[in-house]
Length: 426
Ligand code: UDX
Image (cartoon, rainbow, N blue to C red; front, side, top):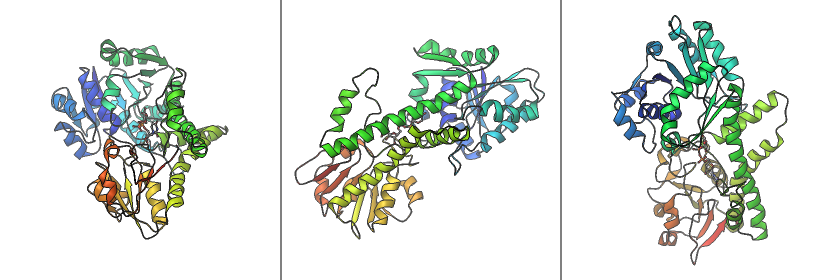
């Protein structure tokens, strides 16, 4: 099939490359000329394992990129993979996807055959039908079909998640739109065993939010249990290992610690809370899911306070990315930790194997070290915020500290003699 993908961010680029790998003829469309040039050169504009290889294989062949919406009518289907960032009140900002919908409508106006539009962006129920479709219709009239296909990609394994998904959710209201999406995914379904869930458009929109809300709630629940475990001197990870053996629960996303961050969980849980309030429902559980998450960095700082006063002292923050395997620092728990340390008058030195550049944009005036050992040199304390494997192998590096106080927010550091070790939830 001939597919155009609007938006070459994280989701759009991964989808475009993976759809090309499935054998489709794909055109990626973005307003950013640099991103377009990078895609055409076969280079990923984002850091994601396996993506460069796919782009190298398909760029210039069945994958091209352009800033020109003029190519849209030559394609059968358009995926909309535009960002829906948070507004200050927590609701989603739809202006980017709305203006793309207008451009899309203008592009397909006059197309002799019915164009198929698939919304991949994360949008609250009703947005596809009440916000996006009318913008397209304003310019193109009613001769197009629209459907919704949410994504569940994780940073760091996005390509694998696309190619071997737990599920593919196809939200449509007409047989024709459903048939189109089946045809897009047919080569993938033929290749791997997966669940194809066919549903209505609003259900598809909600499934994405529900998915992220349940996962975030799972972590917050275990963080709350971990906090209680800590008070009782109980090992929260032994508890999680046993609880996770219940097939109704599962072990994934039961790692307690300093909490969840990233580009999705915080934005999506908040958007769902705001959307619920807009329709008059008070989402008390989801409020608590967020509250527990905000509490964790504060608890980590309080644990530090119990051991030492870090005013005017050097404190190492090990791990700046929101999780290992990515250079993304969006909503990283390192941010409230750094802020809390600075409020206490500490001199912060951050270290991360890949995310230093991004955190430097957020905190240009703290020190950044080239290695964990360098960050620990002369430090009165260390706060471990991301579970990079290398932090499990730290040993003599701790001897470089002025005081050996380590507060571990991810249960990654190996305890050793001489180390004053404090786990966050165990
Ligand atoms: C998430 C969803 O998993 C994905 O399906 C969706 O499409 C986008 O949002 P991502 O943000 O890439 O993906 O990260 P994920 O691996 O889910 O981790 C999110 C956060 O939860 C990280 O900060 C991680 O450290 C934290 N986490 C995860 C925990 O604190 N404990 C756990 O047990 C698991």
